[in-house]
Amino acid sequence: MNLKEMVKLADDMVFAKTGKHLNDLQEKILRGTWQHEDYNEIAKDVNLSEARVREVGMELWQSLSQELGEKVSKSNFRSAMERLQISIFSKNFAPQQDCVQISCVNNYCGEAKNLTNTPNSTQSKEQTSNSKQTKTSHQDLSEMQELGDFFDRTHELQTLTTWILQQHCRLITLTGISGIGKTTLAVQLVKQIKDEFEYAVWCNIDASHTLDEFQHKLIQFFSQSEKLDSSPTNPKRLPLIKYLQNHRCLVVLDDIHNLFCSGELAGKYKPEYEEYRSLFKQIEKLSHQSCFLLIGWEQPREVTQFKNPNTPIRTLQLKGLDIAAGREILRDYGLEESDNSEALIHRYQGNPLWLKSVGNLIQELGIGVTELLLDDTILLPEDLKDVLQQQFDRTSELEKQVMSLLATENQPVNLANLLQNGQISSSDLLNALQSLSRRCLIEKEGSFYTLSLVLKQYIKTRRSHLTNIDNE
Image 1 (tube, helix red, strand yellow):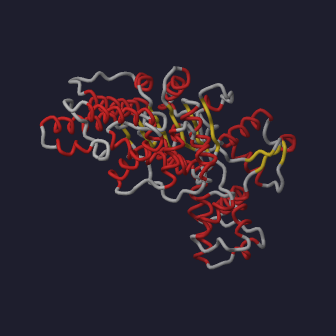
Image 2: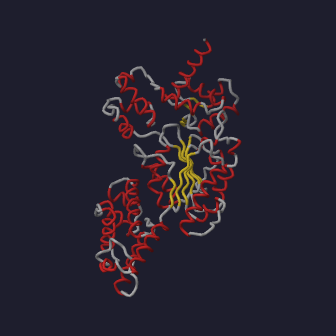
Image 3: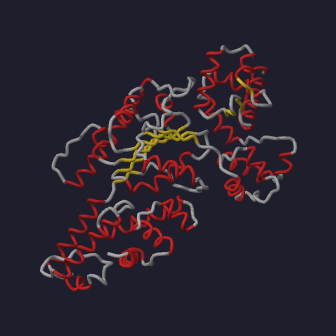
């Protein structure tokens, strides 16, 4: 099959599925894939982001999978098309054999339509239908939230995709302060890569998820899916790690911080969740072909210890959006054209949730951005304070002391200056700084530490509130 024939055949299949012919981008993806180009090369060719090209590619592979009756991906597209060509060739030159009915291949297998009433043709349709059922990837994404607004995270998407699909990392943590967009990014990632896996599962960790319950849920999902594929009478349930070894699985755990204690340094397991430590070590140490993505305000302590790029563990700390994306958020509140919109985005560090909260307040009060910025005012709407309180309340008393010290400083301070205060020993101070860094609550600039303007204002407001209560 040459390039022209491949494009024609693929166009027929897509038209049969969607009622639309290939667009320019889809054709570019097919041609690039046929010529062994990766998504990055194709993206440069069409002057689009790799994330956008990958998203369109995934949708294309899904359409072709449904028409061909087998899972098609970028890696096996060429071989799948060549198998189709052989099937068509066999039909045309061996009419005594069954013709595999493929609805879109009219130009190559036109006579197949005339066989639709024959017993052999009926059997072929059933075989194709069964093939589609058995080769489709299994997904339980019922706990995954709707995507909603997604703002450009091209670099982060590319990084995560590379770690998962190319470097085959086994354990990845996605961290960041509340509202920064961790879950939204993960949802977009899963939508783009889920069809590259045999199994894709999303779990939200809450108070009910003991390890036994979590493992039971996954094993039940895997074993039921295997039963659908192989139809054994009594499928044998294996240990979780065996499923991860036997199949390519993507497992996402959101709100991973619910496994850890409040009032302690970051990453300390609650007693009832200690067994998760062994699971994560298994995932890291034992050989398998699956990936766990952990999302939350904190990460397991054992994960933070790995910085070697040769290990199958990675951590991505999510930062705020850039100015262009920040203006997209402010556009909903009529603030994107303000001369000071850039300063407002910087002040709230490009945090999507923070910008939405303050944008809504500005809109309701009818005040201008310029007026807000004149006296360095930091607005803290009640919904934003509630979110900050949830994360602040998780910190230990030692961390609260350190944040209170940093909140009084107008400039970043180094370790020596913090020690001069004399309230905290050097050992406790170092542990607190490490924990706050892991929670993404402090910023480090070289050897200097600081708090964001929003957190400084929150701590000052909290301190004033507590003082008023004491005076009463």
